Image (cartoon, rainbow, N blue to C red; front, side, top):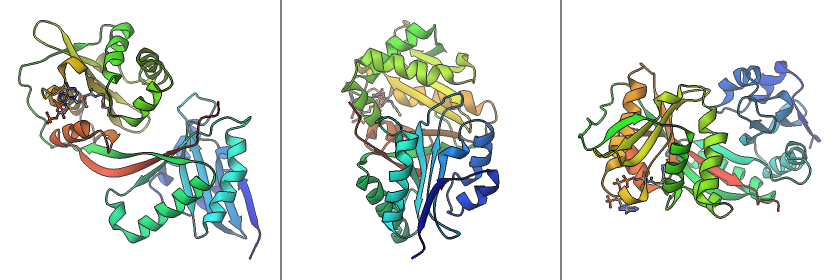
Length: 309
Ligand SMILES: CC(C)(COP(=O)(O)OP(=O)(O)OC[C@H]1O[C@@H](n2cnc3c(N)ncnc32)[C@H](O)[C@@H]1OP(=O)(O)O)[C@@H](O)C(=O)NCCC(=O)NCCS
């Protein structure tokens, strides 16, 4: 068998080579490179002769120096080709004994019913597991499309813009308690609810360049806050970035109105779609998205390497 050559691609002229695997992210790679969300040195291929037998790609938020996600990883036939690619690339992408960035893979919603996709997932997960990664969570990728009815407000809640970072962080601190979201629960094993809220606020919410006066706090008629919704735009789509109901007001269906307020705000700007995501295991949230007219257009498998301590 021809020897395996493992290397990052050398220039944009090698993008077609990198994209020789079909994948939903292929069309975004060129613009991601221009916008600094990807680098050529983060797009790795394993070649046998001219044929790409495995590839891996990393992504980051605009302005960040380090990769945040490994969101591309494909293997043609042999799991070992993928393992060898990761073994060569991971020490470069996560140098100095640091934990590699989380891996995620987008899949059709019915991937378990498609034998060819199951095989792809089995190989993908087997290669990652051989390098020490473990399944972390499966998520639903959700989409609202124009024309889909948005539930009318019942009048139980009033919506107003967020009063400032402190107010939102206080509510986020309450909301993260009892969350079924795997990333939130994992954070709570390492930090306090407040630390987790502060981190999410500064690392994610504050960095959305869409207007922060879109963010809404939901209150009862007497002004008591019940929850919030953060509609935003990321680099690709209008999104519901985050939303929640404080524990004292859960189980009363308020989430439906809070989600509808966020959807209505974005829909009012003639957007072509609104994207959102939640864990398969966050059943109350998944049901609320379904009631709010969001369809599952893909699923996502997140795998992580153990934290280096
Ligand atoms: C998911 C969440 C938004 C649901 O809000 P909600 O307004 O309580 O939603 P619902 O009223 O539809 O209740 C959903 C279910 O929560 C459960 N529930 C009821 N009372 C509850 C309480 N006091 N505490 C926690 N959960 C409760 C019930 O199973 C209920 O479903 P059912 O009444 O149909 O059996 C809320 O739990 C939350 O903020 N979670 C943490 C943040 C989060 O996960 N955000 C989404 C990130 S994608």
